[in-house]
Image (cartoon, rainbow, N blue to C red):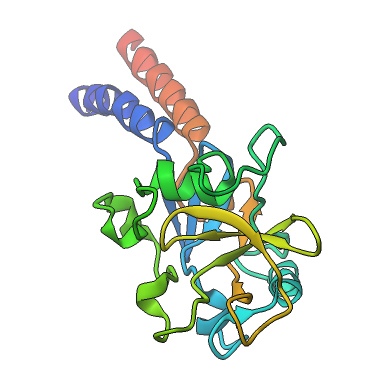
Amino acid sequence: MKNFLTSCLLVLPLFVFANANASLISLGNGLVYDDALDITWLADANYAKTSGYDADGIMSWDAANNWALGLSYGGSDNWRLPTAYNQDGTGPCYHPAACTDSEMGHLFYIDLGGTQGSSIYLSTDPDLALFSNIITSELIPTGRKYDTYWTSTDGWSGRKYYFAFTNGSQWAKNQDDPGGHDWGVAWAVHDGRLNQGIPEPQTLLLFGAGLSALILSRRKL
């Protein structure tokens, strides 16, 4: 028993370290947590379609916001569209710059290893497998440029910011022309971590402390 507990104690810090330094963590139940930004993504990047809410998931900015704000998933109804602002509230950054500090920009460039000007599906980052149905120009009908995701952020002259996983661009466009290039897809995000089975690093540290105390108490017997 002593050897077993000692082995657990030696392995535990490695497990805690690995989780504490992770960027994307699968929470199960269709949820992925970004511990750098402290937000939880739906693993399904076109859930509005796969859930049956919308025929193809392509909708106006207003409809996309309404869908996200009305979504109930993972035990919570506090979902929203991602913001186009930088993490310190500045910006929004926009194309042709690589906007790495917005929520979708961070996911594309930092978490998933995307390259400006290239589809996210050219990335070899294994974390890409955590998600499904990320819309790009490869996954939409020919000639229909709806390969953009709405953000919750206003632009100028009625335009709304979007992010494209086809090429890593962030820009703003008119939302009122469904016959052109101006509708988009919705991807919901949630502030904070929705706990779904994987213990947080703090919990593991407490477990480790308790395990250490148990080993020490046994040594005194």
